[in-house]
Image (tube, rainbow over all chains, first blue to last red; front, side):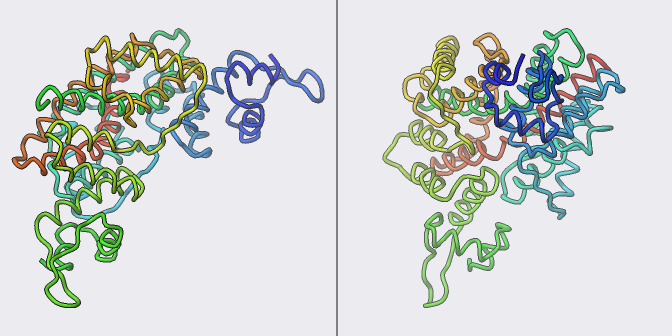
Length: 212
Length: 212
């Protein structure tokens, strides 16, 4: 398909697609003349993923390029490739202060993963943005004097575990390994605002049931 | 306590506290001389909440003032007050485009709440930032060609329901109604990065179990 059709099918303006091409977030099309190129279904899929990362995940272009490099790295086995890709997605704000609260938070996070028996998270994942974000969040709650110990964290972690089973079920609907890795990254980012919205609506509902 | 102690106990710099006082995010202290004021435990609690909203929730000052107005409104009953406060917390980015995808998303969101039997969400909550965010998120996934229908949303909503039960259990640890409302707002905002981090770690763990 031509650029105009790629734009129409993805809903992404042509100027934005050209920008992604210049920034190497999208592989170049197949040249058919000096001014025109052909794009295929893979370009469409990749374009949707880039859009999800940048528009919804608000991830900077350079960081999005790193995530895509992990998506494309077929030298890794499926778990490592999927894990590496999701792992490399940065959280929008990633605070990092080193102080006593951070040290205590690191111990709490370690104890939580131990309790859950999450080995991947503990052994390989401790340097991931997600793990650093968890530690920073626990430290913030501690500094502000709100309870955030293993006992408070466990129910959230158990729900996160159920969500992850569901996420991976969605990912396994796709056949090809590359599509699975792309879907894992896209669903991670795209379902975050869905989940946060639903939690707030559920709180309103639960508050109504208890006090209404 | 004096300003210096309030700063030390909250971990918030005195310059920042003075800024919050000027912006009326924090009620003034009790004047004890022309240059000094006394602050109490309520100031400390309110300061923690303001810090959570602005630093973690990244909510603009004007919007934070609206949330606090709802927290303070003791003319409402407990459910309405708690609901109004949580409801008025804005999501950091709140896209809103009106197009066919948004119309379809509105129908999907309505069908989801109907299926869940969430009445508060449907009847009163449809104008809330959370509901608008849900609709915008579903529309984005639709535009990008990712599946996001009631069937895909239901498991996330069920997990959100379990999380909300847990959130309200934490809130009910506090005795006074005003403290409960404050805690509800703080936990809503502070547990969001915790939940998103845990979901990503859980995905890594689940990927390892399936493909590792």
